[in-house]
Length: 259
Image 1: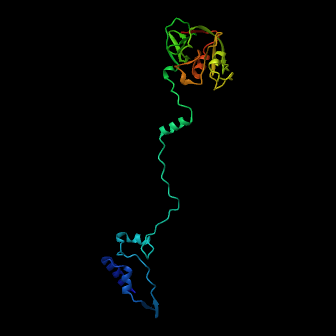
Image 2: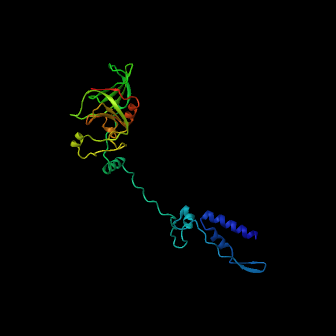
């Protein structure tokens, strides 16, 4: 028994040096039938192993062998258990996206000019505190504070042919006023509604301060991009947030000077 094991070990060492398959070496040194305890036993058929000199395998021959079918030498190709991911579409051009939105939606309006935002400024006029001064050419409304200061708001004013000047007083104040276009305006714009209740879509905006007995008002607007322009039919328009602020600072009877 010891002799058999020694022969097998010697054969394995020999095959490593010569590149011979160890199984082939054992098979060459051991007879097909061996007598143990008076009985002849057939040695089981040797297991098929990967030899180091298998054609085309080189140093990675054992891996090649594991993934072949053992006969034809074809490599086994594992099949994916999921559908291969499709290539991602290129990202959309943001500018193209904006152009598409403009094509199907409302046209883009100019951004609000920060020069017309509410701010505290120096004011050296002769008017007393609480007076409203409307600078039509420069499109500013001043609420005089006294002590050489005034709150300044940006406004929209009458378009050419509709500007005016004079002194008025605030005769009434209304929140979310209704709007009834006067006959003169309907003659110019017969497409206008005859009456519109107050609300976000109303062109008078969130607040209105009526000037004397005239048709003119200081009012809000649902078109803030028109602030700083000549656009109205003589009314003084403001952004809604600005007219709400002014509305809370002045009372009926306040003096309004339009330049």
